[in-house]
Length: 265
Image (cartoon, rainbow, N blue to C red; front, side):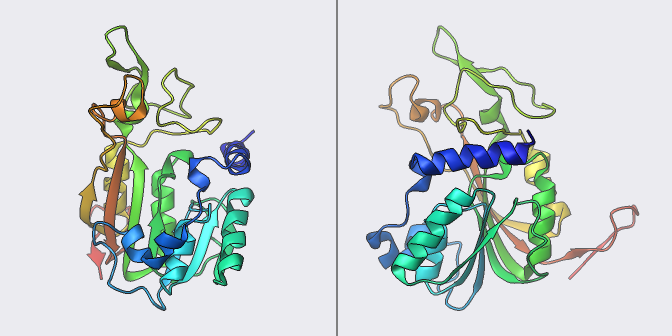
């Protein structure tokens, strides 16, 4: 089974059991949708009329918030069950949301320079090459467009277990090839999904190579000093599980073959 089929099946199961990733936007959240989406102030003051792509973002949360804020929303996801939640919630609220079922690294159904904003939650770990995702985002995003993405950090994915001293073991090589093996530590791994480790040069350098300028980078805090040993927030005290990146598409690459390659606006 390919990683696409495997991950589609895994996320369909998570949608059916209504995991924590399938909590649709609440009435309270929809009353202040941009504040809910953007506690860091990365988004413009208004997204009314803007074309927004919620990438690998099915589940009835992000797309509903953007639509509630007045954006023209397209949501892409590999899982049809996750997308059904977006459809159902949009219909219930009288919102317009376009649904596209495809992998995040194949946006061939979408036009060039179609979007003002692309917003992607943690999901790039489910494809082998993160730069293939960046390449597609660069194509569908307008020059000057905003790309907000969140990723699992490489070190977090390298952790395999906890030893007798309750210290977390980095048991996978940084230059891991292929899909990640199953590990004892599942704190930040989704059950049944096929995942891949992306290095910092791929997560950050890959963005730059596709014509993006990074405007901000944050590590969301998942640490709690009172969390018991083994809890995911206990592990978060020692390793930052996620990185969130604000990037802007301001250039196009002329050539990747020539050492004299330049960037032009």
